[in-house]
Length: 233
Image 1 (cartoon, rainbow, N blue to C red):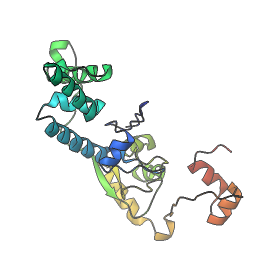
Image 2: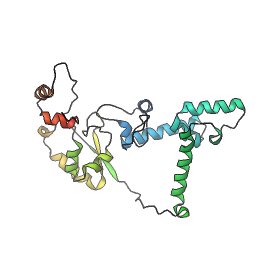
Image 3: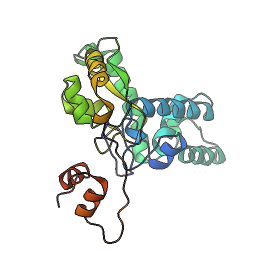
Image 4: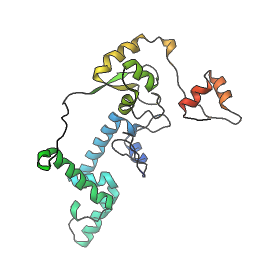
């Protein structure tokens, strides 16, 4: 989920910023829906269905377009049509990465379908729900949620990688947690008093500001501001 390419594509489904925005994946300083497990997966399914329809039900062309863009594949098809050449995926002149992309996916599919034919032992994955959504009334640090749920912070981050600053701010008002920790987190959240919730907000630095004045103006410590903004000085 933390994957980030040289083309600025992010998340499990590698959406570039513009395509992400087209599919309503919010991107801000605090939250990037391209890294949101649920939101990005739904957007990827929507995009693949769109491409599948665009290329007349040809999944290989749809996958190629997912990798290089529908414009790239569309132009390649037009070139072949003008030359009287076949317009299926295998006969198109596409970027080198795209030429390898589809075969790699087909190869992985074959390995999963028949692992024994290739001497591969795949670890079994239970066909059951692994995580669930827990609603949140206010923003919270992922590290604090992890402590409440008695789960490793790194594990909770992997399920909620869209919160770029480690706070559930500027995104959906929920957090994903493993099923086995869900009831505990619900119970612990119910016990938190309204006065114990922290209200996070984004502050725009003005001329003459320093960490001390910002901290005093907002009633927080300099250490907290440095920590949450990943500042060393």
